[in-house]
Structures are given as C-alpha cells and as structure tokens.
Length: 291
Image 1 (cartoon, rainbow, N blue to C red):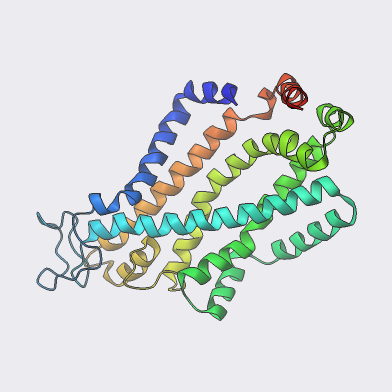
Image 2: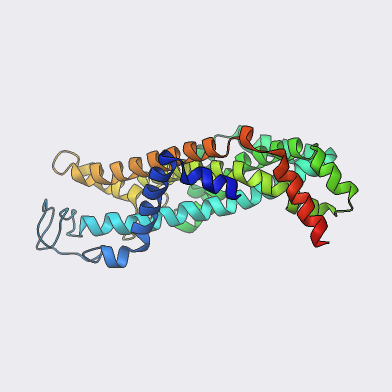
C-alpha cells in the first residue's frame, strides 16, 4: 500500500484532482459556515434579483438565497450519491466474491440474476420504481441501490476468478489458511484497488442519475435544496434569469468531470502492470508469522 501512496504523491495530475475533489466534498460539509443565508428562507422583498451584498448570486423566484441553495444543494446531492454507492457496492462486492470464489451453481445463479437486472435499462427501472413507490429521497436511494450493484458484482467476480488461481493463494491454502481468512487477507486486498477506481468514477454517474430524477420531480422535494431540483425549478426562467439553470447545471458538470478525471488518474496509479508478486508473498509471510 505504501508503494501506491508514494506513487500517488509523485503524480501531479492525481494530486490536483484529489485536492479539487476534497474541496468539492468539504464545501457541502461546511455549508452552515459557508452559506451566507438560510437556504429555505423567503425574502419576498427581493424576488429574482441578480445580486446584492446580502445575496451574492441573487435570489430565486420566491426570494431564497441562490448561493446558499447551491452550497446546501451539494450536501443533499452528495449525501445521496455516497449512500447509494455504499449500499450498491456492499451488495455487489459480496455477491461478486461469492460467485467468483465459490463457483458452480452459486456462480451460475448470481450471474444469471445479474444478467436479468442488467437487461433492463437502469434509468427506466429507477424511474418506474420511484413512480410506483412515490417520489422521495428515501425511495430514490432504494431504487438506485437496487439497480446499481450489478457493475460491482461483475467486476468483483472477474477479479476474484483471476486472483484465486494465483500461486500465492494456493500457497496460503496449503499453509492452512481458512477460506474466509484466505479471501479477506489475500484476495480482497488485491481486489479493492480496482474497485476504488470504479467507485470514484461511479460518483459522477450517480450524480447525473440523481439530477435527472430530480429534474423530473421524482427525487428531491421542496423546499429541500438539491442541484437537480434547482434545475427543474429554473427551467421556466431560462429566458428571464438563465443563471437559475446555468449555475446548478455547471456545478453538476464540474463535479462529474473532476470525479471522473480523479478516477482516471487513480486507475493509472493502480495499474495492474505495477503490481509486484513480492507484495503477495509478503502478505502470506506476514500471516504465517502472526500464526
């Protein structure tokens, strides 16, 4: 792991996008201190103003501070995205490990079930589920999680299938390591770097999906600030106040680009061509010494 950390610290492209991503995450977290006003407080004396000392980015159609709503909107959007990724990654990784390591009927069943879920377009499936269950953030998280685990499952299964045939895994098995410890000590640590790239790039994809659902009125509901719903509210003012749709739109695009580029940089750092066999040998040696 220290090898990858040193390599990341020497990569200026990765460090740039990593710092930008950290800033994008910190802004919503620090929203109570960064936002100049309450994001849901109405000021009917200042409707649709372009800017002022009190409202740096102006107000919306009902007098709410637009800058405050942008900052707090990131808290809602990013929180939902991270929750969805945490749930879907947990489900997908678990099923992928079971399918890849156990094989046989377990692998066949999980693979066929995954193919069935993938056969239905994810966006259509999410819209259908949210429409049936009712528009809300909780239902949106549930619907997105139910269809987002498939990619993690397929990637994890493929990685486990390739890793379990390696010599160091056979050596661990002959050394007396139990199956659970074999998976947790020798396989999962070498699967995680690849999954970390997938998770990083998935942030942008989930943010776009969430924004699309909010734009259709199927996710965030008023008065909760959320970037996608801010786009929906600003559509009717595209001619008179284009900033109401331009600013949240550019915020979403900026987040998607930065997290995708961060994932690309991370993939270059964790390129499997740089994985050395001595790392695997060292893991097995440490386990033998501890036992």
